[in-house]
Image (cartoon, rainbow over all chains, first blue to last red):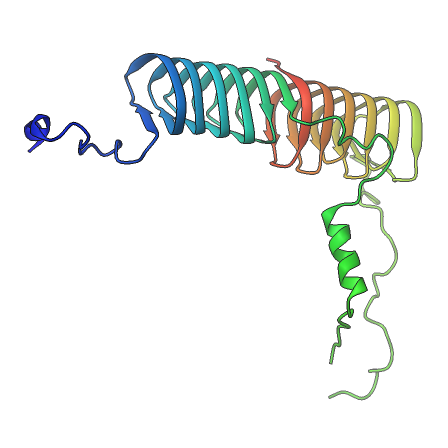
Length: 156
Length: 128
């Protein structure tokens, strides 16, 4: 069956990873250089040198990526060197080693990870309160509860 | 269905406030409450539970910057937990940054852990 793929029409390739639109996997042991644009899911398990623009990007434990990244969500378990801009979340797992400039909205770093360079919260600084207190969501919720009929807790 | 003693409120016999380390003379536990504003340096050898505001340097073995805590300056600790706000330099062996933290400046660490939600704009330097 596998050898007969060539005889199928060009668009239909029954590979486990090519079914989803916008997916790219650089498998373990593979060395790839270039530019990835407009991907949905990118998984680097091998070595990739180049830029990535992808909705989500995952560098697995053995993955090694050098380049400039633009993503919504990114998770790193392997090695990374370069610049990252994640519009949403950046997760650096304990096995990860990352170096460069990072701009993020949410960052999570697991104990044991190595992270070096400039880390910048996008839209930062304005959210610093200096000495004045911000009202937390919990406080707002409490106010809401108090405004509505406060459920008195009866302990019978 | 006991009737006797039901009207007496005796439940909290342990009502009195006890400092966490009272009676323990081998370690010192310092508490900085949230109405304290300090201009200057604090140097300790053990544990500091920091809820106040400081402009200056905070130095001890283990430091907790609580949610209300505000540090403008430097923090040196072997074990540091930041849940409050820091503007300046941090140097810690084991650094735990909680989701409520806001940090600006330079972070030097050996081990680091950051909870999602923390707002950090800083230079990260791993020390050996």
